[in-house]
Length: 310
Ligand SMILES: [Mn+2]
Picture 1 (cartoon, protein in one colour):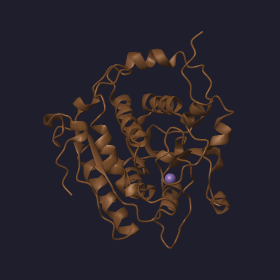
Picture 2 (cartoon, protein in one colour):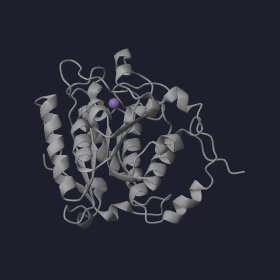
Picture 3 (tube, rainbow, N blue to C red):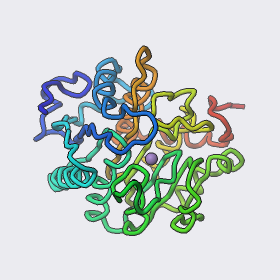
Picture 4 (cartoon, rainbow, N blue to C red):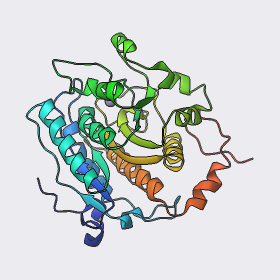
């Protein structure tokens, strides 16, 4: 499928592959989801919402689209979970080889398997940060190792480092695979005001983020296949992402599991805004603004909140 538009309707000159630092690959696959279907409609809803974003980011005082965002052809492969994995892996590799900052938008979480692998093969000692309600550590599910329930199994075995954030649902069998030191369960994050720093301490220099949007609280993000209560709120999510971007070298990321709900745009608009925020933090030229904010960082991490300044 050929995307005729640019991401967010940015001017053509910033949407060309040759000049763009950033590549966005939409992937529509939703073949293995087991509860509500509809993640295949995620990329279109996300791209539509992005057209309604302000392209100036207040917090970083930047217009990150000027780094160039190339909207790659949507991957619509759906023959099998394995075929999707292979196609995503090849495409991601191709753009990494072109020195691009590769981002993907799903689709269900299985689309991340190939993207993660392409990145950990390219970068030595890469940390995978998984932000997700679900552990996704099953070795195989419903006959396939490329099922959404297995999205991080390969990374847990073959990547150098995996850190799981926001987990609040898993099968008992996943306990044998899980590295508990590097798992931040949602119920424990509530009580640990230092969870962000603790998590970052486990990260190596280079980091890839796989962000399953069901990690977010359903009150702010209802549009996902399996909306688990007790998730991350908006400002704590941004604070965490900003810290990672500042303290480590993020080399790419994916956002998955947007399942649009008819009659409301809340979820797709949040996804678009989050995507653009992540790029803004990554490429922000105005580092001073971020530094200043970091010095006031003694706020608690309970349910998201504006920072209190005494
Ligand atoms: Mn997931």
